[in-house]
Length: 136
Image (cartoon, rainbow, N blue to C red; front, side, top):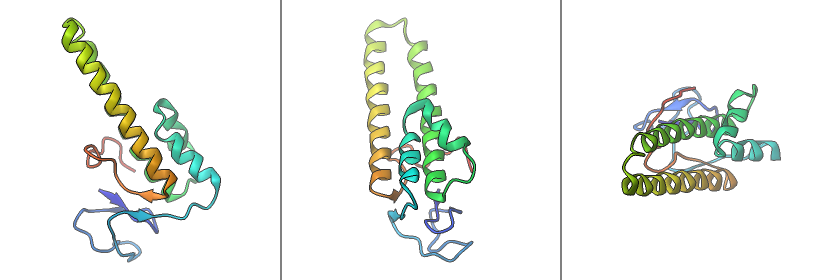
């Protein structure tokens, strides 16, 4: 699911326009941030546990809210992955490979999210974008 770039409502993948405000749905949606605060809050959304800050602060723009939800979902998936690494810690060679893959994936997905914020793009993260453990 994606979010409307105008009003922040959730969109289905097949939507051509927002059901709430009628805004046409495109591939990557660009958003004009109202302040540098939106940019910093969007970046915080992809910095591990700091994703809680933009998620818990009230009265955020739809841009920040969308990235905060993506950041929280990424954080939860990272915790699940690191628990899996801990479960397999008794297999030394497998644990080291799994640790490297999880660490690299976490870093790359966080970096992609930060780049999306810097480019003022409102789009999902690759591979995990459709996973919504926390919804608005």
